[in-house]
Image (cartoon, rainbow, N blue to C red; front, top):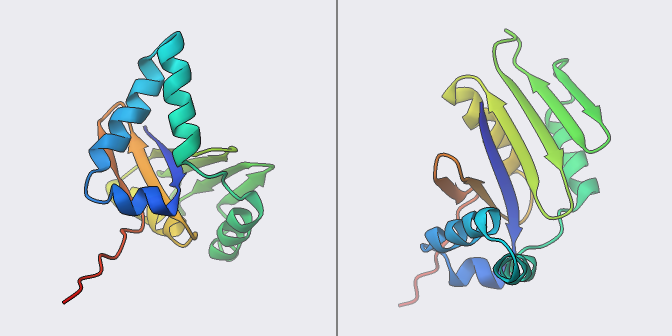
Length: 146
């Protein structure tokens, strides 16, 4: 099972650090392993760069995308999605500052779940600390001026 956390990064911060996502990864990894004063400082930095996850728009987007599927269950801020064959599952927990996504199954199932989450507005950064994977769900378009 793969576990990701999705953070909604402030627009200005996301644009400034575009292409340097490793910095975000290092910060979030540090928050997991830091202790004492260092943990407090890192958590304040994370609080500064992230936005609160808007539950109602998120709920509406998920509900609309999965309305035709019977393999979808919602319980408060938790969503459970299962593939028609029953071999792939996803659990999504919407918390104040991040979305926790646990995926079990094939890589195309993982792509389906992230494609579903891409429809949300905002700069969502997915981070898997255990496997050192990270990236934008909806990459920022870089403007080139001539």
